[in-house]
Image (cartoon, rainbow over all chains, first blue to last red):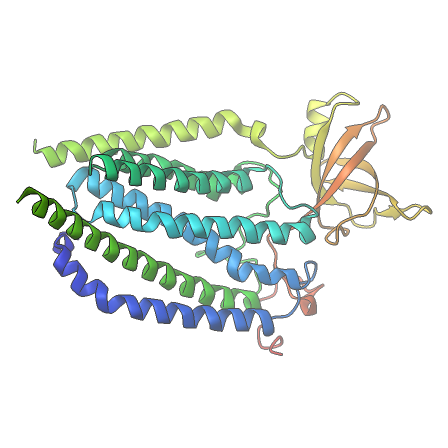
Length: 239
Length: 149
């Protein structure tokens, strides 16, 4: 990773990668949504509301993957003082918060017809809401510390601590009785979701992941540019 | 010891402490954080009649009886070991069918009948197209070719 510690070298990779991720992601999401909405059959009990999973599940995965990214970036900032780490973590926080919110909203819209309620305070829904709040807190903290001292040590520590919520989200449906259903998709064993739904879901997940990556790269580039501007203004003021 | 290694050790120790604290917390919560009682929990913990509790489990096959008034429904919730008789008056959600999951808020009356005030359906982890209904998903491979529209 330290090969890319140099922002110039990072930018030479990020610049061509951004449009590839952006347009690739948009194309895959469009394909997955068209396939998912038009070409999949109604579910045995849920009917057509099943189709919300093509957005809901990728949002949930990426909301959680986002915090994993923040935690990794925060660790590499605390331990190796990687110069891009704080830029990466701050860049992830906003799309992470957005995706978590979309996960909650789409889940709520699904819950109304399927369960009969918009919201319940069970383990899964509550821990996911906590993740959304953690993102908001992280954004405020990282912005504030950057403005006042340029140091993001406290935000980095918060980023590492927050990771404890991820296993709670993942295993909430196994540790406790919850309103939310158990895990349907398994990498190793057999998935309990039919292949007609699984394929568009996987394409949608990859598409949203590429989009997420594109947003992060764009925000990192903007953040690096802002640092450069700040440094130049400081130099000019000093002269 | 280089400063970098010192920070690495500290960070690893902090992570171990953090995960330990999280696991201890989750262990301490245990069924306190459970969203509902199963019928076995009711047999085991014997909640008093009249206290508000939440019951969750599967609707037993063949147990749903709708009353003549059209809005009262009697059914049995089971979890494989215990059974609980339930009555509910109101409109039931779409996913409320025999063999599927249900979560009900309510209280036990003196005679061991659970009187539900709200009734939520619970979806399980199986996502099966309507065309495949009735096919045993656990024994048959997924057959996508039969589903292409």
